[in-house]
Image (cartoon, rainbow, N blue to C red; front, side):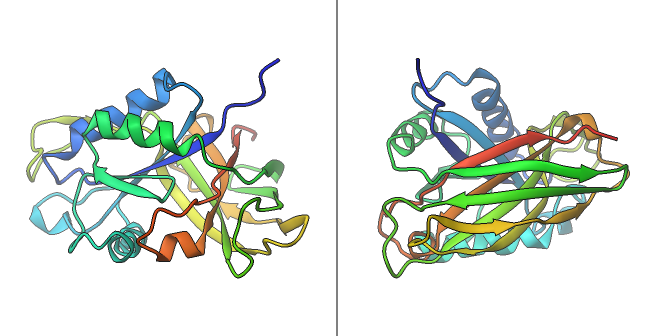
Length: 245
């Protein structure tokens, strides 16, 4: 009997104000819905940056937090500047987010790397808050001096906007796995059997549709994040739905 496919985290930095982004948004949605890349389970994070907002359309899903996160990748990959659409696979490789061939190749390669076991459970919740229990196991293959960062993300599917200004004016732009919240839970100890245990609580905004929300936990090698070398990121995930009232 086959075990679970290794998860590959695919981040897309995008904006509704960028005319080059809708094809990348569509590609991310396709990768998630098809799940046809052998040996991999695609976990999507669609992160809307805010530096396009001055061109006439304010992206309702944008956040400076995602701009800062992309800037960290710019320092790692030495791209010279941030840009959209940018896709990052397992924190190890970046490319123009609408390039399907590079996406499939990057995901296939990332699926072959060692992953860190992560468990995430829905602990409690009501209409406005959700609590989770997250546990990160031994970070196999991590460097002894590494710092393994553990993140919790909440994404929402089924979102779209009738864009009325900017480069995409007049178009209805759809999205997949828009990141609603991203929180760093802490740093795991690569030498421990249980690297990190956390019980985070998130406030859920009223406009978020509970039936379309997903929570996922993943970890990233800080050494890999800071280096321009192709170091393994030890990414894995645990994903659950948030639909309880």
